Length: 339
Image (cartoon, rainbow, N blue to C red; front, side, top):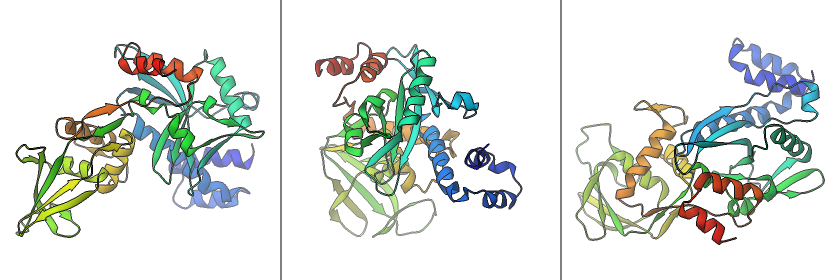
């Protein structure tokens, strides 16, 4: 077994090593400089599962084993996950493979080696032509896209897709990772907390601790919202102050506003609530499920509608997946109409 293969296997088994032994073993390998790259790659794979296993249409996200014989590796490349995704009738599901990639250091292209792509294609054929998507985490933008291989440009040694092309042809909405349109006029009123009676209060960077938060939609009366709902709104929108006094601050956002994707909104919410692990449980739910449910409470308050994207360049894979996911729904009719 090559050192590079040992490294990949040992990284996964890190917790089994006594303290100090793991680092000592890594330093003995010829390819020790690749440790950080492997660790980061595995971390992105783990984050993907923690995030997308609770996205609305995903029923199951199953890791696929990396263990292969030499003969198998020469022909097949096993993707990272198999997803079970709900169909439009919500009474059945379809399966697809997902392999996870990370684009770091501000790069604008995702490249996958031709040999790896060929291995994926052979593996999918062996598995009854199950479709494959490449899930790409664009680190600088903190955006996930799901793209089929036909969206990649084939060079001699690799397949390549740019960030712009990945966004144009993103298929994430088949998993329930859709966008949100906020098109209503609303205001946020924050009451300043003059008496510090609790540590469990919101903090405004300029005005200090906030006692309560209210939301006023159009010409209706102010309605109190909880801290979690405010955190979700504040994580994604910028506000302009329109009034203030000794007791309160009133702010208004720029609208219309499009939230790019549910997964992006959950990630933003995680950053403002100082949660470092998507699997951390809050009220007996993973953070992803908790964040998703908090965001969904905003439908009656500020969210006007869900927006399902349609790829700019349609492929055989996108045809198959949109039909499976949306059936007779209006989004599929729109997809077909735009052919």
